[in-house]
Length: 406
Image (cartoon, rainbow, N blue to C red; front, side, top):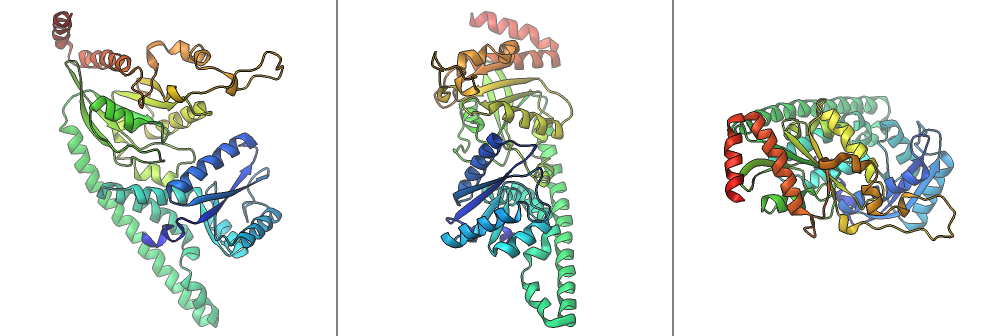
């Protein structure tokens, strides 16, 4: 799939475009474009000027209005730029029309995420999953991607026929490739299912959460291993499973791919076997970046994605990470404007809806190793309860061990 990645545009500046609609207000769009900029940086692209427009819904022909499109075109010509990234998935028709008008390379959020996944994939399994998602994205867009057909179509009816035949051939090649990749994944899925079965009946715990919230750093702390951790989106693609022992209690801990808003459906489908670790987990550790201004929305996005993966609700502990990075702006006494979430302290947050969660939430800093011992104690109790429910005769052994420790 080298032909479909954006390596030729790396280290270049890109214009970012988003829409303010009935579904997403101005504040949300600002955050979404900031995230799009982070995605661009992760892909090696320098994010540049951000364009936004208020519309009831995206223009079905050009996504933004014609006036805004001309404004973007003028800016790109003035600054000699050749890459625009849109913060939504564009239809093949929209891409064709925008490219025809701007005469530059167009990416949407989906193709950008797919490219990052292609860059991050390390194992054959992850590479196969990403390649399948790429081909599924490409199939309805072949008329845009195979630009050599444009020259063939310029030679009258005979050449148009050649172009159409070539397009049908290309479509058949891609369709066959998709079928082969699906078969390859079935074979790998069977191997991985067998591996999971061979792990026995140990309690399984899975780390889940939005991308870049610190899951891999926490994994390293709990398992005393060196899982790759980086301050970039989708640093982890392949599920990592480690055996963890707290006191006398062993269990399996898995680190899964991070979620993100507007995650391409093809990617969720392609990575469904990787996410079997989530389906088969006895306990979920939902890691949240408490320092993020919209962490509550991120929680909702993760919960929604989890429901797509597995309809069954599982026992979950909310781990509010990066507590050391939490900041707020206290209001002056004479400031009579309404309070915003920027004015709420961490202590006040703890007394909000989180206060009702009791042992189902904890505030930590994996980076600063803050409250890690408390987290381990919480994990021990939860895993022990699951283990005893599965093996009731082990209750006596746990009691004897704890008495000996005391």
